Image (cartoon, rainbow, N blue to C red; front, side):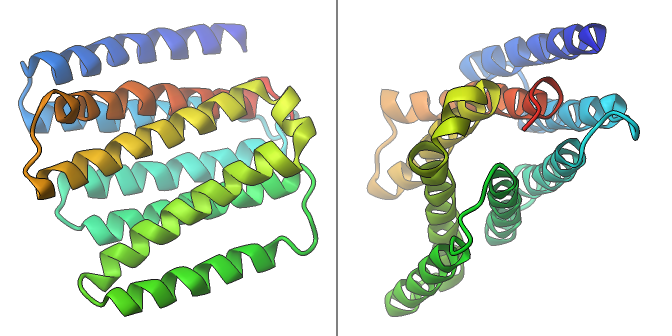
Length: 224
């Protein structure tokens, strides 16, 4: 198992250096850069798949294989198509699966009402806004679900926050990545294309790949 982890980290380390240096230096075409980024998520999927053992691996490991598979699908849509709404909605499934994973650690029986209430609220606000309702709804739902998941990790499940180090760090890095994605997509609408905009462009995968690596490792190296 340790050998598999070392190989996984070595491969992802090389990919990470390539992605970050490419984003900074712009020496790769968009297709090549996006292809390498998507490949890094595929490596996470293969790591989880190859380290899964029917006898010793638990359901959490199997669940994370599904999570990373859906993550790969949503990344493929966002990186290689113009279907932004579809990509975000697929990422909603990712957050729903993470919500279920967190629930396995010790769920509040009434917790589902939190998600239902938040969903109704977001859909209502989006309908009032009317313009680009689909994408606004998708983004707001994703953001709210993400924050609720993080909130349950920090506030409710204090034992998880103290013990599941890889999972919690990966989840926070995931959030930082998404904050940069938000700024990257909003700033051009206000005519902002400065150093901060370039910082958000580079920071997305600077945080995203380590997040996916840690989240993947959490299913193998930690036993929820």
